Figure 1 (cartoon, rainbow, N blue to C red):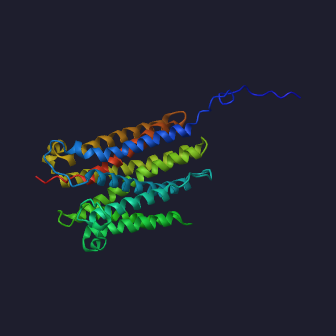
Figure 2 (cartoon, rainbow, N blue to C red):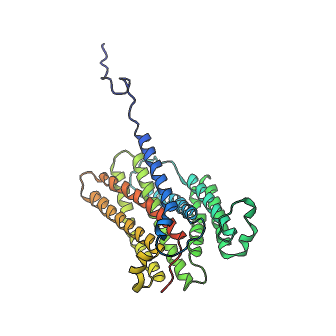
Figure 3 (cartoon, rainbow, N blue to C red):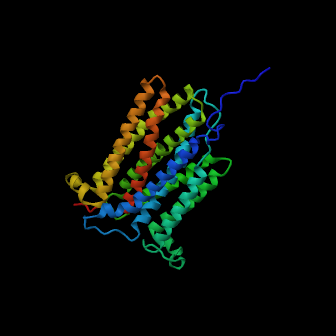
Amino acid sequence: MTLIRPSAGPAQAGEPAPRPDVGRAVAVLVLVLLGALLPLLGPSAALHGTGEAAAPGVGGIALLRAVLFAALCVPVGELFARRLTRAVPGAPPVAPRAWAPYATAAGFVAALALASVVSTGNLVPHSLGEIDVGGLYDSRDGRLALVEVNAFLVAWLCARSARPGTQVWPLAAVIVAEALRAHPTTEYSPLLGSALTLVHLTCAAVWVGGLLYVLRTLRCWSPSAAGAALLGLYARVAVALLAAITATGVWSTLRRMPPETVLDQLTTTAYGRALLAKVLLVASVAALAVWARTRLRRAPDPLTACSPARAEVVVLAVVVAVSGLLTALPVPIRW
């Protein structure tokens, strides 16, 4: 019997076969670098011409905050999206590899670096001798920084354990600590501000991290009805998440910028400029989400909704970077 061999492809002809994973890795690396440059270079652009003075090392602090927020989004989103996959009828048994151990490790490093800044009176330490670990117990900000460091460490241990679902408790501790840190006791109605930040940060982490894990899951599943069902489940939850994020964001803005001064402060203060950039980015994310939802409902192949959803993840990554920048800039004065 004569065997008929297929014609030689590019790899058989001596040319290297295309490797989409390499191209994807390069694209991710470029996005990470751009995301790092945004908080590093953003303060100078935001502060230009405002007459405001930023704290020393504001670019590095903004980068650390962005890393901390991203490290929170990944494991929270994984926990949420895994619950969604269990609700999908006939879901394939395969799942993407968890990124939570790497994310919580990065969060621990970022929280540790931020704690060292708090220990020196919010000044960037230039040597280990300047770091006063014991002094962290003497201030509210120091104790909250220690909570975040320890919580990320416990979350990393939980992510590496046989029961990764237990991460939810230390991750919740990080969110609570961030909500309290963002609203000092000298602020007007600090508990209300902390409650708004708590809801805002929780919903944002579920939205960003959940979409990332859902798209990673769809790559593991072959095109099927289960994939479309999973994306549809996430889309329905995302509507409620976006509504909560918008409501808490607007309320928090009006607490810091009275209605009659909002338009002016959005262009004349560094905080306002960063906030305006974030609002525009979230609006583009919402447009991409609507586009993906329309494809999911009306396209012959619902999984074509993955294309705008991937773009949505990229823009959300930029939103996380801008959020890190926003927390490092001086808060505007209530006029």
